[in-house]
View 1 (cartoon, helix red, strand yellow):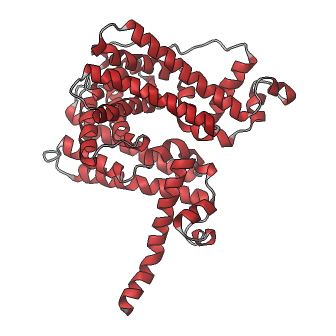
View 2 (cartoon, rainbow, N blue to C red):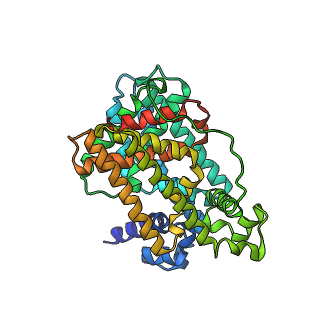
View 3 (cartoon, helix red, strand yellow):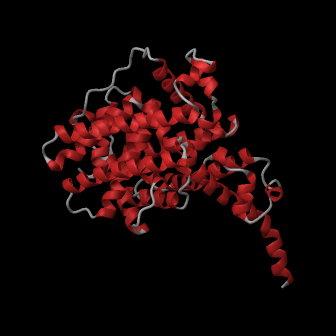
Length: 396
């Protein structure tokens, strides 16, 4: 009995630290880093706030532990695959192991994309270096053996698609068994790797690199805010900083918006309305029902590449919307995904609702992640190749 008590005493600090990190990760993913207080984490962990400081210096240190800790199982899987003999590495088995690791650490993608900017410089660099290493290993271990014909840009895009597909469950919670989910994600990732290169695909013309500045002060304020929100986060920038960038300060600023939240609502509304327009265009342009989903993808790729800052803000800053507005936007988002699901089933009638829902989320994740990765966009064939990869991931 005494031995058991000593064992529990020795184990408790390590378990308590992990427990704190787990609760903190859940709260950071649900509410965002700035909206979570140490008292909230303590309450969720069933301890006092003072007890947290026995394990972590501050909230930023806790965020670092959560993000880097959730990334470690992925690194372990990839290192194990890399140690295996090339003759014994089976693509599907390796992808399945990766998916399983991600499903056990679902918050990682959200925390990396939305909260990593709040890490200190050293931890952010470490996370970025580890993420870059993972991308290189995905290309080397998964893409290149199956597709030695691809140039570097096309291989990089497929490697990122693998990462997006395997991490996509962070953004949805569907009524589907774990085994079926793993199978769907592995199938989609394998199809993305094998997608035809851009020269074999059709897409809308690529977006222009140069644009004229808008003369409207309101439009300038929205553009300034979107850039700032994407770079520093909604909570990290003031309305006065937004206005000063375009020379609108003091009372003049409030002729256009009542507060900072109004600007965020305007920005996300803008993106959703543009997306609705591109959806209508796809439905009007494609008469064949089994081809509509492909046209929806092409149109969304075009929009996401054109309005990447708006897209990014709609994904990462929605937590800061007023509650009633956020609920309304959530319904709009659900309806848009249901439209894609409807036309995916038209193209692939063998799919049930659960499988179609998974694949629609997968497709959206591939596009959303790819357009926000600057190094991929240097490729002149980026947009058509992204469309090709997304078509393949859906199995169309």
